[in-house]
Length: 320
Image (cartoon, rainbow, N blue to C red; front, side, top):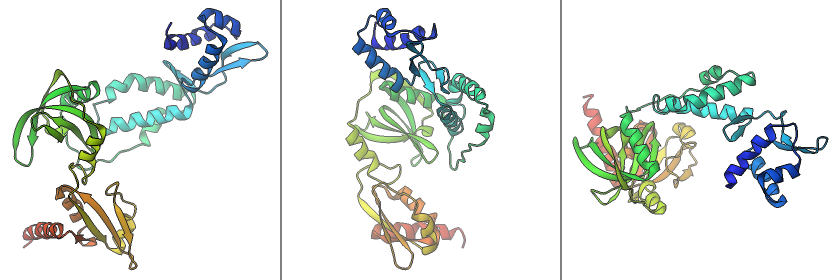
């Protein structure tokens, strides 16, 4: 009997009577006292099964007074059930129709557990709301295929639409990780067409085909360096640092914002606030800076200042 099978055999043994002596458990499972001691620790700490020793009955049993509820192989407290339902509700709002149906059986069981504690799952669902801005529609079948390829380490052939050029290119990729960024999904991959790490917006993939070939695995440090060094969703080694100065009024918000994990910040005497962030591609950074209008100034580098000025002058032409 494997260790996993043995651990789950305890529930069958302990469910049948009020309490079971240790000697009987050792005999049924054909284990030593030392193994039994290790099993008890795993049952209580790893699987959260409430096994106790009853001194009066001189045996082991499941604690019926424990408030935890059971799912197959797992026991949850009321607080943990609430957390699971909250997460389930957030996933449903995050991508409606994607994971919701697959989680329905679990949700029904969780609803029943909450009801046994006098809690209403519907009321909970009304208390959690996600607001989306700029969310793009996904091709659900492609998203599911890409997710499957990512988790099962398979290559996938995609038709990727490049919005900058308006051209669709067929390529084979080895998915490395799914990224949810600003309400949209991206897949960081090894592109076999370009022989380099690339990131693709999943909503820009209308067609795909799961392949039997195993995915090429990229070293995690190499992937992190390629995809996390720059600013925002654009990967690549950072080529420069942007220095942004926020007005004293806007600084009240900017101080609590993280623009990049490696950002540097300075508080100035007049109440203004300076953030320095690395970037490899200025496109997303330009958009983020421009949305603050007159409340932010690009101090450097000069190339970024020039790009901001050109973009603003183009915008002003619409209002001549």
